[in-house]
Amino acid sequence: MILILFGPPGAGKGTQADLLKDKFNLLHLSTGDILREEVSNNTNLGQQAKKFMDSGELVTDELIIGMIKNKIDSTTNVEGFLFDGFPRTISQAEALDSMLLSNNLNVDKVISLEVDDDILTERLLSRGRSDDNEETIKNRLNVYKNQTLPIKDYYLKNNKLVEVKGDGSVEDVNATIVSSIS
Ligand code: B4P
Image 1 (cartoon, protein in one colour):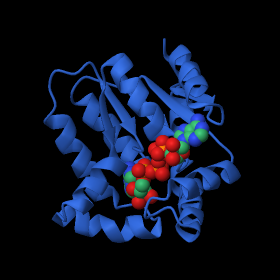
Image 2 (image 1 turned 90 degrees about the horizontal axis):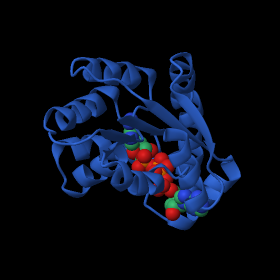
Image 3 (image 1 turned 60 degrees about the vertical axis):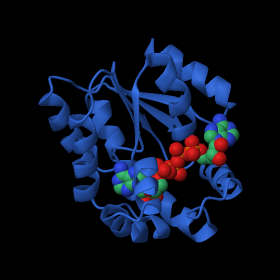
Image 4 (image 1 turned 45 degrees about the vertical axis):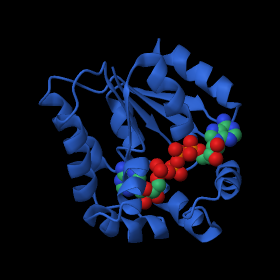
C-alpha cells in the first residue's frame, strides 16, 4: 500500500503517521524528519536545507526528490510506504509517480487533513519547534496555499483523494482515516 498524508503545517500528518505506520506495517518517510536529521548532523544537504526551513520556504525540489529516491531505492521488505509531508509541489508529485511506476507501484490513497488556520497556528505555537514562531508560521501557511494546495486537484483528478476533518481528537481523526482506507 502506498499512502500519502497531505495537509497544511500542523495538520497532524506526523502525529497520524506514527499511528498508521504500525497498523499497516508501512515505511514512514517524513521529509520534514529526514531534513531535520540532516540539519542536526550538519551534512551538506542539511546545510543547504536549513535556510529554507528557518524561513518557512520549501526546500528545492531537486534536493527533496533526490533524497526520496535514495530512500525508496535502498528499501526492501516493507508492505508499502507512508509519505508524510511529501509531495509538496506538483513537480514532486510527478516525480513520485514516475519513481513508483518504475517499480510497478502507484499511489493508493491521499489523505488530506483539513484544519482551519487559527487552529493550526495555535498548535504550532504551542509545539514550539525552532520554525514554529509567528512570522515563519504565517509564511509556511502562505507557501502551503500557493505551492502545495494545487496538488489536491492533481490527486482529485486521479480519484485518489480523501478529505478528513483534522480538528477532532488524535484518536477520532485516526479512526476516520483508518475507516477511509480499509
Ligand atoms: P514538516 O516537518 O512536514 O512540518 P509540519 O507540516 O509542521 O508538521 P505536521 O503536519 O506533521 O504536524 P504535526 O503532526 O507535527 O515540515 C517542516 C519544514 O521542512 C517545511 O516548512 C519545509 O521547509 C521543509 N520540508 C518538509 N518537506 C518538504 C518537501 N516535501 N518539500 C520541500 N520542503 C519540505 O502536528 C503539529 C502539532 O499539532 C503537534 O504539536 C501535535 O501534537 C499537534 N496535534 C496533532 N494532531 C492534533 C489533534 N488532533 N488535536 C490537537 N493537537 C494535535
